[in-house]
Image 1 (cartoon, helix red, strand yellow):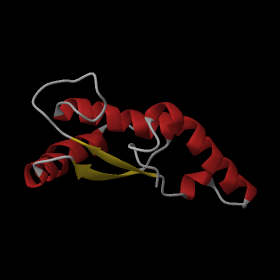
Image 2 (cartoon, helix red, strand yellow; image 1 turned 45 degrees about the vertical axis):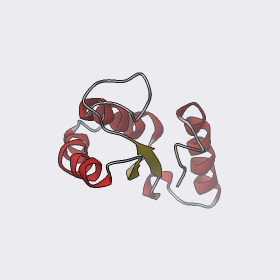
Image 3 (cartoon, rainbow, N blue to C red; image 1 turned 180 degrees about the vertical axis):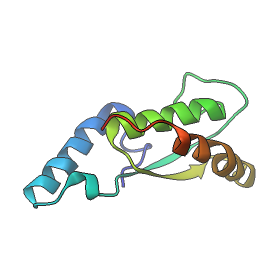
Image 4 (tube, rainbow, N blue to C red; image 1 turned 90 degrees about the vertical axis):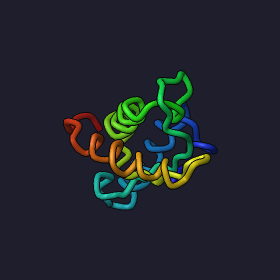
Length: 106
């Protein structure tokens, strides 16, 4: 369960490839693994150039990219502040939109 704070996006693809290779070596199908990315940030009112610091739609796009481009199939979210509101927005707006996104990629 890599964390964004320690394993940023530009290093995630290589880490996932190592996990998948290890699964193959162990005789396991990598698709059967739970590959969860631990996130922190803030869902705000406007788009941002900083990952996981923007509007709900930006979060949806970023999480869908993590599913399609990196093979992540679960997320743990810890808001940086305003915990109740952040978790509510994540649960009611972001998560359903990510689930509704077309399946493709990894």
